[in-house]
Length: 155
Ligand code: HEC
Image (cartoon, rainbow, N blue to C red; front, side, top):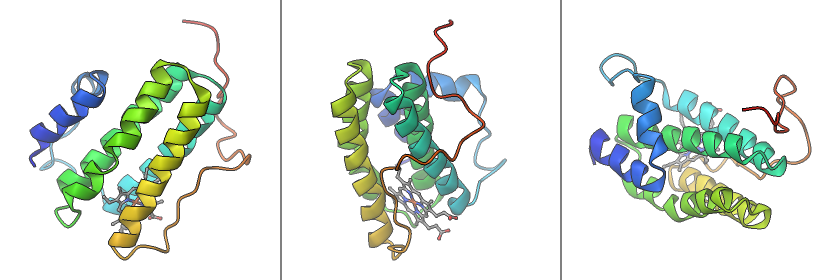
């Protein structure tokens, strides 16, 4: 599937995603292609921040982190042909359920969705001989001490 098709698929999951990508004028693939490990490192950061935002019930931030994370996964599949598109597509139900949970501000559904998403991360790692990269639902540890996760209450 080509980049455009992926962006459309992504847009179906959250219309704001495509808009956000356009606004920021993401470089095209001939300008800059991040290494897969770097895309995944960013995905790991977003996965953690998504969880922390959801836990803090900052649904606006959670929605933002979810969009960022989805974009990372799409980029991985678009830029790296060795990654089967199907492996990313199988994450769609979990991504959708997280998106629904955020819209509904439903903490329990959010936690379930994050668990399913995490299983999806690991399923792909296993299938591509990266079973040593094990992602888990974060514990209480605070790795991003430089960012406030509680909602500010300001526009
Ligand atoms: C479609 C397949 C696929 C999915 C889905 C996927 N990954 Fe990965 N991931 C990979 C591959 C392949 C590598 C190994 C990259 C390499 O060898 O450079 C990797 C590596 C990683 C690494 C190690 C990067 C490093 O340099 O230390 C992290 C962290 C990671 N993934 C996080 C995640 C998270 C979090 C998710 C889910 C939100 C996820 N991945 C979903 C394929 C996937």
